[in-house]
Amino acid sequence: MVQDPLGAFLPNAIMRRSPHRSGPLSGLSFAVKDLFDVAGDVTGCGNPDWAACHDTPERDAWAVDAMCCAGATLTGKTITDEISLGLLGINRFYGTPLNPRAPDRVPGGSSSGSASAVAGGLVDVALGTDSGGSVRTPASFCGIYGLRPTHGRISVAGLMTQAPSFDTVGYFTRDALTFGRVGSVLLAEPIADGLQPDIVIASDCFALADEPVRAALQPVVARLRSVAPATEAALADGELLAWGRHQRVLQKSEFHATFRDWIDRVNPRFSSEVAGAFADDGRIAPQDLATAEVFRAAASKRLDDVLDGRRMLCLPTTPILPIARDAGLSEMRTAVHRIVDLTCIAGLTGLPQVNLPVATSGAVPVGLSLIGWRGGDASLLAAAQTLAREFSIGLFEEPS
Image 1 (cartoon, rainbow, N blue to C red):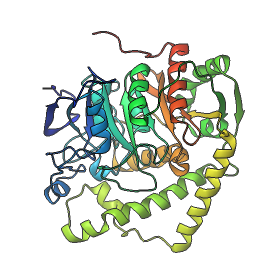
Image 2 (image 1 turned 135 degrees about the horizontal axis):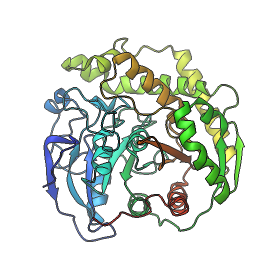
Image 3 (image 1 turned 45 degrees about the vertical axis):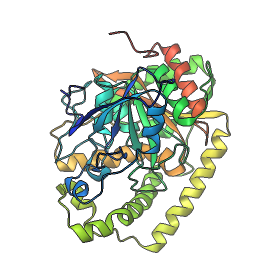
Image 4 (image 1 turned 60 degrees about the horizontal axis):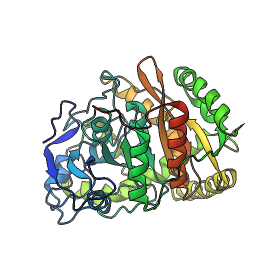
């Protein structure tokens, strides 16, 4: 059984399930976020009242089964932000997992336990989900690799979804080769070697980042220019912050539609920050929804045109460093808002994105991201492996 000094796993959810057969992931251990069905174990969604009023699943989620069929050993279920509503990794019921790379700071969420378990070496791989940044943020904060795939590219069967037009199945690893191995299984596509993509450096995305983030990434971007064809351009045709505003409208509408009836029926216990998100019952003017949908279509077309099936967009994964574990509620709200200002780009357009653990500010991890073209997930993972080799950053796991 896995020992859990990080508080990454749910209480009573550490297990050892042997793989279904040997395969390309034989010898690897993995954990899953508490949104994935695991047969015989209730999917708790990070909230005890949700767990208490839902049946125990009889079969594994598609992604869990795919990992087991590829030879990986399941070790347990990890903590998520309550009903997966959060980007900081805080859960008032089950605790906040430790950020192994910055113990006095939050791990990032809502796939917090999965990121903590990987970063701390408890497992080789962990499954997470990403709607508004819930893989990319903790990957950046904990200094590990993380993938948000093209929307719809990896099956969400057996997953507790919250905002269906945003929800994706993602994952974390510590090294780039394992990152590629897992990707080839979940994408059912081989990962090529040595891909040198054309890079578009999103100048307005870097301008949104705090100075410590920009300073940490500046030498990395300079090095990137020397190893790959790179140009610099503004992403947005207008105000970049508008992207986040429209994502918040759309995601909030879907999130409330998912949970409204359950909240009305059960009157569940919530932490104050989660309860506050439901205070207005999700009332959004129809015109605002229609405007956001039009904006999403235009933003998607703009990025499709920019990337053109051959380019990748380079940007900071988050514009801020992880905040302190004991930060006040107002600072937490500001941090979440600012994170979405950049994670909205792939979320709103449904494009794949990887976090590369390439930099630090002092000892605190700072992630750099590449956003790939629609359906170009395998090429994105290949680029991650290429850059890991060029930058000598975690190409493979060091022997213990």
